[in-house]
Length: 154
Image 1: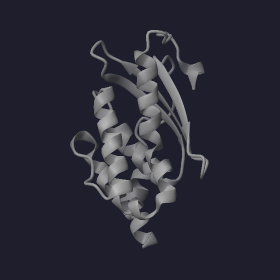
Image 2: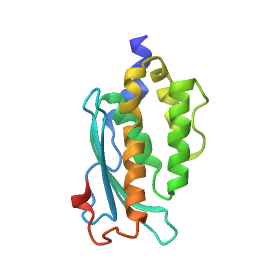
Image 3: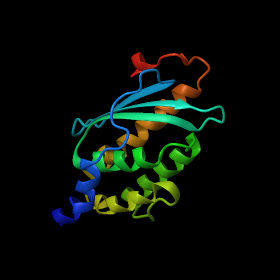
Image 4: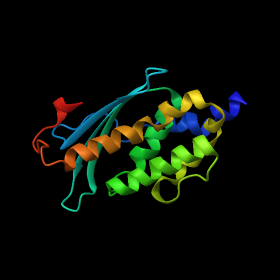
């Protein structure tokens, strides 16, 4: 059963992190931490005039499962808006907690993490990248957001 959890596909995703690092001048930044395991992800975003993600970076210090979810996010997040990321997060959470279907659309690759549903202690770290990205987008959209630099906000 543990082999299903750490499949070759999950390990390959974890080893090839798209959009790793930090943005020099994000409109929004957010850090999220999984209390149980200490996984930590900081997400930086800039938005276009339509509120869609124009640029994205993430600093990921997480287990292989958190890294794999962050890799899926990083590979497909450009062009997504708050609602699309939120829907994917909600579908991902339902897949893990309730055995729901995997997310559809640009984040459909999260299906590879379906075996995590049998390990509730791993759910928070798996969702971490989406939580951080959502918080960063919300910050970028807030009227109080500093548009030149949000690097101190995390």
